[in-house]
Length: 543
Image (cartoon, rainbow, N blue to C red):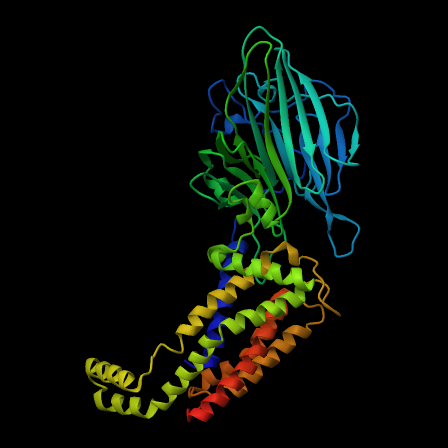
């Protein structure tokens, strides 16, 4: 196989893959747009279980007017708004992640206006205040705003049910972190036992947005984890067609977008139920429901869960729950991507610039694959040298394919040539390229990462298209350097225009990925010259 054909195969595979992903996005059914605030999807629970049908929705009306309708909480990482009716987080801005590079506006992960996306939680079960037929609890709070100064910040909310269950729902914020501990302190002041279970759910409008395209295919939807399944995406379409219903020890549920994730993580040593549903407005809901907790008269018990709202930071996510780091979705090649990302992180820690780190990791990867590249070039040269003998065999045994195959194999064995020698190295290199593609596409570390001069964000396209043009030029030089035996005029034209086609595609690729491909081509040019010089000394012909 000629090297030019290898480039064509890589390009066609990549483009076909991107087209297939975009087709899935474009042909998904158009959901209903949510235009109002809807907080009425609390799971109803009897003293036995939570109904799985659509009847588990309460039309929630606040039981009473709390001191404040909403309260604001500001930390060094989060700026959130909590609704005192039910104690839901209806807004969460990520302080350290601006919408635009060097902009002042923080990225809004959760929101109750426009594209609905909120985190709800509460207590259901036989005596849970959130399962009360009169509506969700209206918590009392001591103040309407909180600001972190030093150490942990506790935001308490209190409520006492008519049945004598005192509830203190406390949001615990930690400096420098995006996870929030949600803690319930329950005191039974009645004469009988009280039974509750906690739940946490994420609700989001399924209306399409423009966060992804063919050249940057990103996933927006739900995901979950169980003891048996470390990580599985559960798309909005799946939620609409088939409700999730899993019972597991530990586990978690989440909502994903390109660089960010929200996730409810229940107690990992308890048995939890994971569910999903779509409400009448087209909002997707995924939630966990915890174990029954019984509080005896005069007894106080504490239960808690964790809500993460932030970037897809693999190290921190892995420390929170098993499989949560897999929300940085590298696809089926994650087992290659993860060590490559770890290497990229190591290099960045030494040089302090992600663009330079990409250049260096390209040098490392291409250097490690040099023996394969050399074997590919040498194998192709030997195959070209055998062309006259192969043509003679075809003329001699053209009508008898069995004898022709036997004669070919004897020729390969005699000349010590592997007919797959030109293809096998390419098959090994392709997964590494795709793995790096997903590293550069999914890693939040590259978001707004500066390189130098005009490239100030490696996660978006080159604003002046310099890198795509340079990459196309290097592909053209590779074509001129490498010999070809392609005789078909149509194939020759395709090969001639391949650098132009690829340059056009590169116009929309993230600058980090195009930088990788450009440096990879430059290294390939240098390696090809070295290999061809050695082949000339050995008497191997290029063409």
